[in-house]
Amino acid sequence: MFPEPPTPGPPASDTPPDSSRISHGPVPPWALATVVLVSGLLVFSCCFCLYRKRCRRRLGKKSQAQAQVHLQEVKELGRSYINKVQPEVEELEPALSGPGQQVAEKHELGRLQYSLDYDFQSGQLLVGILQAEGLAALDLGGSSDPYVRVYLLPDKRRRHETKVHRQTLNPHFGETFAFKVPYVELGGRVLVMAVYDFDRFSRNDAIGEVRVPMSSVDLGRPVLAWRELQAAPKEEVSALG
Image (tube, rainbow, N blue to C red; front, side, top):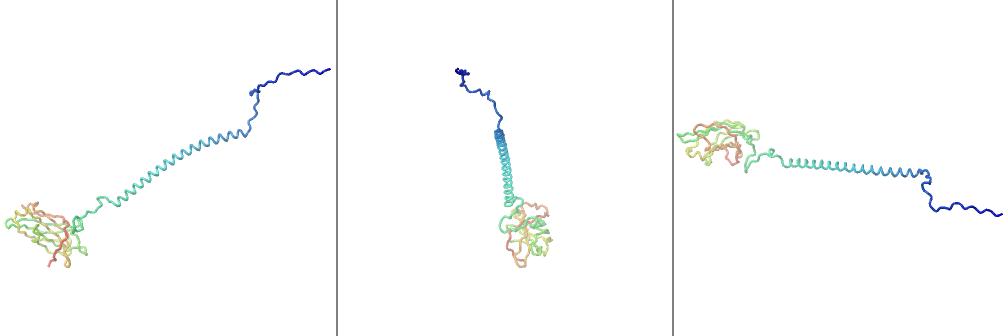
């Protein structure tokens, strides 16, 4: 007996197997660790970028504030330097104009009391040198030896002088001098009363003077007045004999 031939089975199909039918196995741990690590790196990179941006903004603001502070300090330093080099006008001491002026302020020179009267009968101007007070001390001992010289400009050669009062800054003169001048000519004259400090061994120093334009004086009645001494130019004067 011959063996039975095998029965043919269903023909083999050339189509690939359906993926839906393939069963998925469990995900390996290293794959999960890789995904977590990559995600963490991305999050950390984003956070680090944001942090650096904020730090740059803060540093920019801080540097700008420091620059403003330094600029303010430079301005203040410049102002202080200008104040040291160029003081205010009120702080400057008044300078006397012209050569030969005494370095002394007006309130340090003192003041002089005088009287004026005109005698119409004799045609004379009567000048009274009464007293002085608060005169400047020009001697080493802190005092002066004052006397007063009186003359009518422009004629400076005709002049009168009071007696010298020793070691005093508040002398009482009480002397009167007469100038023979027609009344019509007084308007063009200037009365000068110059106070000097007498020095026997050198030239006499000018303390100050009072100038009175006669055109501004009403001689219809006697005049009695105090005047502040003004700085007078130094000049060579002969010592009293």
